[in-house]
Image (tube, rainbow, N blue to C red; front, side, top):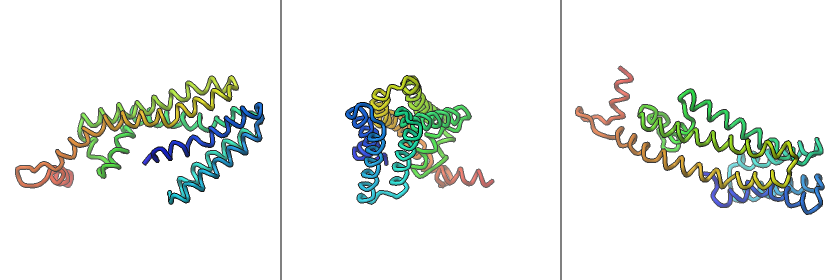
Length: 214
């Protein structure tokens, strides 16, 4: 899952700590960097205590570490936010390309959750819903980049920190909810169709399998 309210706090804590310390210390970079790293370590410890998978623990910690290292290396506080901008750019490209080549990522993600990875693809309504939802995700990542890149080049550290938090989980949850509303009805329809008895007594999914074998 996306981690609920605890996930929201975990993901935002290092950035919030970096921003607060940077502003309180009068734009001192290194105290903010070390405070953010400490925040990332705290989040990792809390996740470990909660028994979350180690890959989630290390992924979050590595992300904070890379951002902190880059900012410390260049001496520019705005570089703390550069890895996040680049990651959003990569996600935007990935989702957009998958929609353009008619292999929408949201469809496969929803199929994986439902336990049937590909049956949605044979249904035109499900494909349309998955494509639209995938464009929503591409748009969200693109919007983040469009907002943050000008702030990055302007060196607006305070605004970068605030927009990263505001455009983080709140926007993620909104797009996730819209994707669910788009996909849930069509996936139910696909599931019902696959379970519907056919004249020879086989289920719809069985008939599809038989046809594909023949």
